Image (cartoon, rainbow, N blue to C red):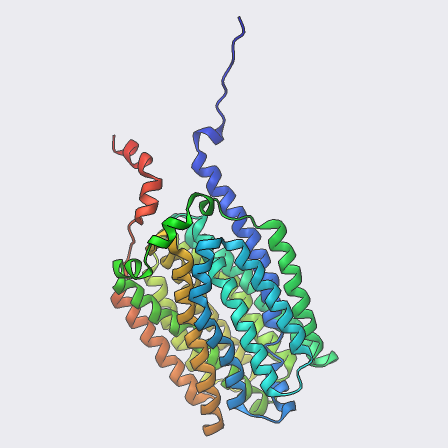
Length: 428
């Protein structure tokens, strides 16, 4: 008589650990893809002020250029995030990348500010699909126990591009002119498309969730469950992005016109910010999984407010870099931690919609602050006033987070259902 010997592998004993490991591998693949895309976004950062000077326009126009990107993201981040809940994350990610590549090709041949503003708005529209879907993807494949770390890895990928992009853009603009970087940005987007298509699979949760169920879930119902915390997160996220918009317009124009900073120095400045944020995103993302999200968000906002005061008193490239490094610490404390807390609070059936809604808040800050910063710079011929305003906004974010955010978040209903058998077994 034949006998079968059954073997038990570690995968059978701990299937949840295998799924978690696979999920983190997908997060890493997505982070690599995001870093390639962010190179394309970052290349143009040190170029815009010189492009504006060449076209003979001022700070207000540069503010409109930056704001047009954010305005279209405000309008489309929620709908496209919701679309990723219905059709899947991967189609939205891939479609956004194709659109971004096309936008940069048009950019390279723009000869007036109107064309640049329209193309920048198109870039905002296609990126409105990518980032909410990417954040929702991470929430799909993680749990509250590893979500902060995963968001940190995703933010790290973002920051790798943030370092490489401005640095490469500054070097290219310094030696090869201001047009070629846009072509490279388009190629970077196509490379990202290939990477996402080849390396990033649709999350398993998408195949387990029917369209019918998703359509029955109201975003209002989800928001109402944690109205106080979501409101505080919205203020904190707005404050985080408000400072970046002020820096990219008012401060950079001030540095170029008043201190004579070069494109290469601007690239180095943003590169230092990126290096600090890469380290900070990983460290603080993991730390938030252990100690909770709230006080990292509050502390990051306070540090951000202080760093903006350092920008006001800085009068050299070294002073700017030091202020930027301090700002990067504050932003890396807040960024992945805010995203992880949104995932903690939200029912998995509409991660995409909620990430899109908060993306609209973030982009709202990025629409208002560069426009306001540009107008204030033209009015005062200095960035000090707008930097003080940004510091006040960051302080408001710290206060709002301290008052409204919970220190710890219980499991969402859907996560409790997933782990119900484990909870029952532990109880017995």
